[in-house]
Image 1 (cartoon, rainbow, N blue to C red):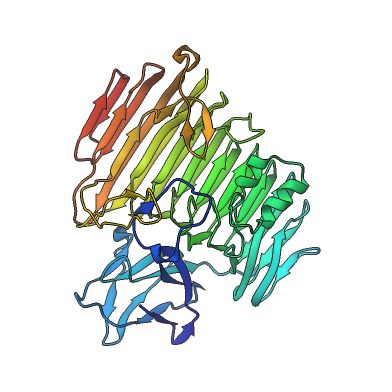
Image 2 (image 1 turned 180 degrees about the vertical axis):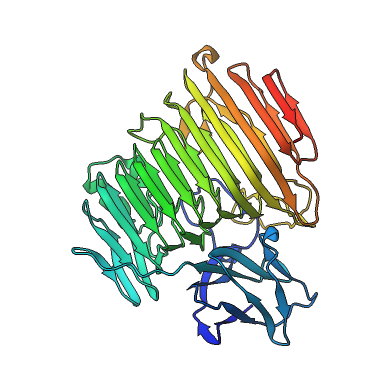
Length: 480
């Protein structure tokens, strides 16, 4: 569907983005998925003015439904003969769905932006740019203006005081995955090699990577079409703020939204994430060279659309460094695939710990029809459009235990006495649904003796049922 948009009578540029068409995925086969599994969607981004009347012109769907998500926004919408008209009074992100989730306009309304230029900045004005990999120095600013589309990636390596700001688009569609076997090398992987990092580090290279860097600000930018995880903060990054960023156009395998790995003092807020895989992941130490804790990560006031996987996840890997003081607050999930909120461990260690995690004021928009996730075993497999799967609202467990053999393969456990994990001080508070559809269940599972779960609290959590597996210490369920 083609949307035409005007703000206060002036036309706005409507941008395309490629997204996954349905819930089909497979373990990385060495080559990228085919375009017949995807579809084009559209988005518009603008700064607010004194008056902000949006007119959106499009052909009405056959069933006539028009829906704004998050549903809790309840924006007044007036239908006109050509489309809809609505007023936007404050910065926000939302979708307008004409008929179904396959005919969508993503709307990003920003506060006014008049940042002044600074010396020695890397500046991209309106138009197309093909810089490849941008590697700023400490103290530098990367500015991407509104109307600019920068085809490339950003790699921060052991730098500090770096700012990436603007209203333009960082598009990584020209960057292949780091371990793609098609014969075209990723320039990000080549840059990783220049810094003397490992082959595995080449594999974990995306559209934006910050490696052991501090005092980083990313504000206002739109990230489109990542080759892997879209934003990666890893190996002891510190003091990072992601503010009013937008992620869209993720369709390639494992294209997570934001992965924060073994880093400290990270704030993500007022942002929109539509990812093919997990939207937001708080990851413990696991990647090459990671030994530091993941500590003091806060996510606030974000809108999430998950086309596969988990919307918000706390993930413990194979290193014993702790995860602690993680907060997800006031977030809206407009579409969900597998799990809304997840705390889990893969692989495990002798001393894995996840402590003091809070999910608070989270709302999940429901759908009357839920299609099933499907794993593709071969190129010949096609999506079957089944409806026999239900996403989960909350899952707390140990998903897999054993040596990490790579590519999501877990080896055989020789000695279970080697492993020990503790989850302590986990709170889910004010979790609710919006709209019509089936409520989702919660699973709390101490499914192996090597995992201890202590002091887990559900306070005012709306769920179809709570399934407790195994013996859990000090679980409380409260209705406020």
